[in-house]
Image 1: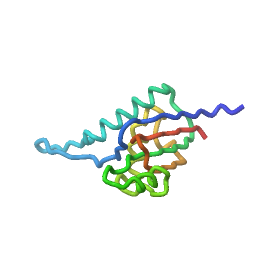
Image 2 (image 1 turned 60 degrees about the vertical axis):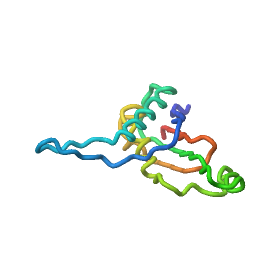
Image 3 (image 1 turned 60 degrees about the horizontal axis):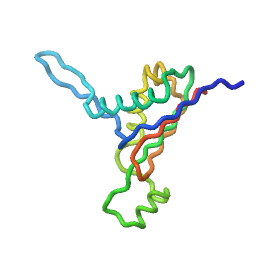
Image 4 (image 1 turned 90 degrees about the vertical axis):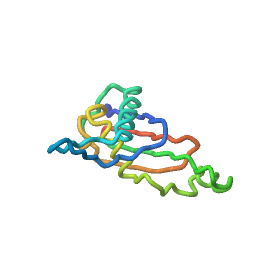
Length: 140
């Protein structure tokens, strides 16, 4: 009997990559904080996960992350069709590793105890009519 769990969920909207922490000075102290855009996106990721599962995965985990981006408005119909078919790859910002980091960090303590449990990671950036991120987490 295979009791390994698998959880799939979708984060709506344009994918957001993890931004670097910011620093501000308060007198002699330096405060570190997460940029608002990153914090809001990580909250959306947590909400999207909790909408499908309240459970934490255990042990080793594989994560498959598909980032879908809308084609630019300024392209020809032919180029648009090629992008949506996958003939033209999405090679613009955001970086795949920053996309993965924003998703995996957001799920710390929610989908698993720590993102160090993720030992297999697949990230792909694609074009689609609707911007979103699709995530599949599996216990190995």
